[in-house]
Image (tube, rainbow, N blue to C red; front, side, top):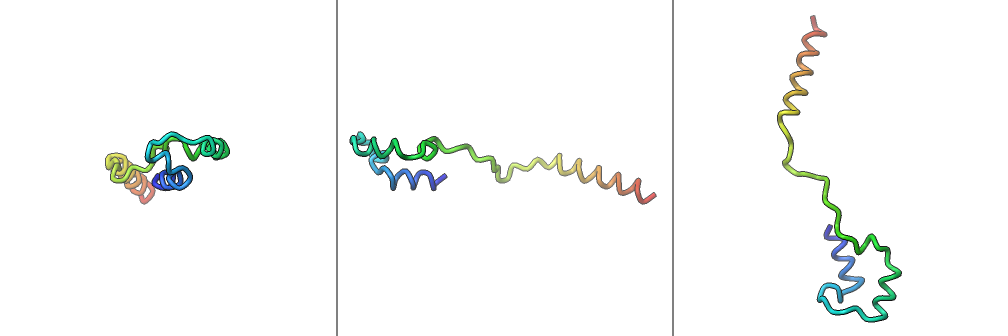
Length: 71
């Protein structure tokens, strides 16, 4: 995420200071891939958001299957 902000700051420092773009900057901006200027996507990584009930259910199912197999 920080990469996109840093890249935008390097390519067009005027966007950070909220100054109007010059004609030259506008022409350069039209040549830049629009994905670089789009909003940052939401991260799919959720740190610490693990549901323990799912893990417990999987472990219990495995134990049950192990018991059936061993008999």
